[in-house]
Length: 267
Image 1 (tube, rainbow, N blue to C red):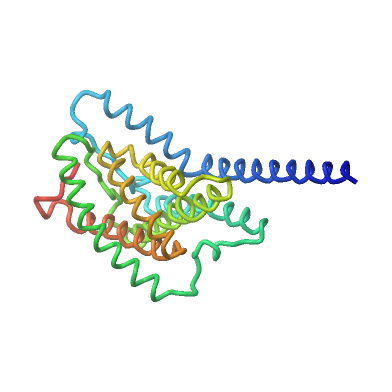
Image 2 (spheres, rainbow, N blue to C red):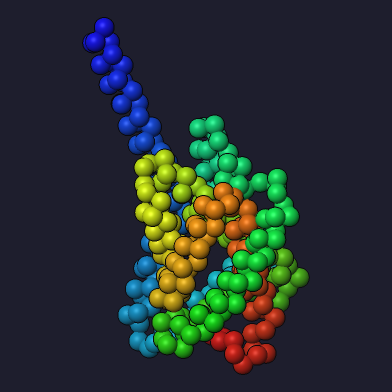
């Protein structure tokens, strides 16, 4: 009888180890195909920027650039292709969640609470947006940041719709993966809340490092705020709304104001 119990216990322990290893491997795969790879790319880009002659503020980081200059329909096709394929890791994460009996709804990414999500997201965007602009301008003036060019698309009819779609894609990708999915997996793997907060926030900062030290620090701080709000509300919905509004403001605002106001740096 004791032998059977020991065997059952050993089997249970082995199954738990396999389950934990599977969760770890799935998480690594999702981020190796998305924002983890972006973090490595940003680090390489930053290394190139700091070793290039001249200061960081004299260099530019362009976010939404033309993929086929002079060929607007081909350019549009590339823009839509890039936006769509960037969301594949979110679909992969959703697939992994379904395998364990959960879903994106478990992370609070659904339409069950649209108005609270919109309201909270708008408030977050208003607070972070104003402080974020001031921080960026200060970091650039001190030489800690590149000049960020949020958009460099041609003046064609699809310019603003593509900028909006790009903003929403960024928001869905980052908040679903870096906050909702990653925190769930780190909790399941036994990370403490503090360690999970640090991991999520550092990851967010890492893939913004191509903008400079200011981009890393600013987004790390934003990551801390977003993780705390997610822990409080249990929903990524408001964070997706906030991030979408922030990026729409940055992309569309730059397109409308660049070269027309003196306080906005341009490349």
